[in-house]
Length: 507
Image (cartoon, rainbow, N blue to C red; front, side, top):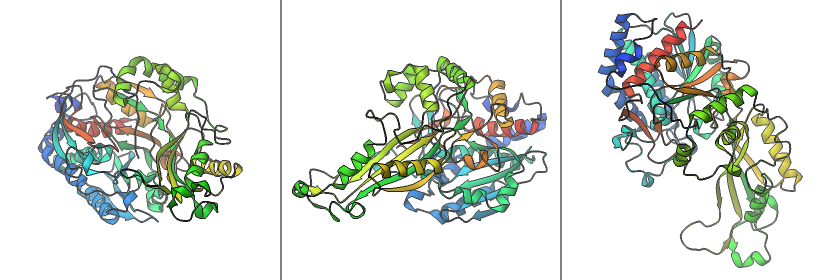
């Protein structure tokens, strides 16, 4: 998923223009002048290759939901890792899609983990302005030149920029200031059902135990150049609810003529009625038995962070971006943001049953399916919530409705004082990038395997640059911004290099 949902921002940001590459590393005292110049030159010389690397990766999609290019995608990810300098790279098998693991031991004092996903969401080429696997560079009004393609920002563009930083270190003949552990998976977009098997591999676990923290490369700037640092993410359960004549024992076992509704029960209506028990009548608050018993309220510090974010961000811009006119209950901006950070959700992604093509088709469907995602907040767990959902349905007589969990995981949290967060703050502050801390992302990623037991690592999403449209048509990743406040590709690559140096300097 990695569906990061951060508050939009209208704050002033740092200037990243023609001199961005030169400015990016200049203030960092841990670097010698020769290192800075060598890295700058290597990044500039590798610019075209960096773009092509991202485009070639976009052209090689792995789509776990469709079982598409599973083995090939893992092989491709492994080769990208080897090419960028990772050692001991191997493909880690699971009961589903494999993962990829590798390390770079540069002899440094500090170890840092890097999380990659190599899979992408499904796509319909008819909905795109250019072929979704072409990675075409196009001019986007108000943004500049951008790569458009499935996976451009989620996550192949940012991950490609990080790989470009590793290539720059090699080309410049400079050692990395930290040692790296790479953990990559190919099922993030279906809820990472087998990712724990990768992390719990003995060799992977041993390497991660040495790490100071772990980060996910991202394009972390809004279109105005500002940024936010989130201290966690909601958890998620993805599942299907299935109502069928076969399991119910009522209704037809195959589609029949709709005129028979006068004497035959409808599995589709049964599904609708079961769904109605999961939320309050307005659909906005979960009503599953016991759903809120473990929910941890916002702390005073979290409320303060949200208040500051609300003060510094534009409600009007956020509504325009989302195409909405009202928040739930017409809440004021700050209270809407508090709800976003603090509330679990029950969302219907899609309803499928019977005939949905042109015109009408008078049938009584024998089967109906609802695809749901349920967002979780601290201290909820996916296992506990799945059990509560099943018990809730059974108690109300809907035990025949199948509950098929397809993926999911617990929420993540990282302390505000963690070294990896401090390094992130230091870079943004050094370059006068205005930002705020935010308690948690409303989206989800499988970071719980790192932040939870037994590892207990701090985790962060780090990266400069801008992109958007994850999971949607015309997903894009800006490489030459028209707004000088936004980092272009080369500045983003250098930003990753600086981040590694900052982590190396942390006490």
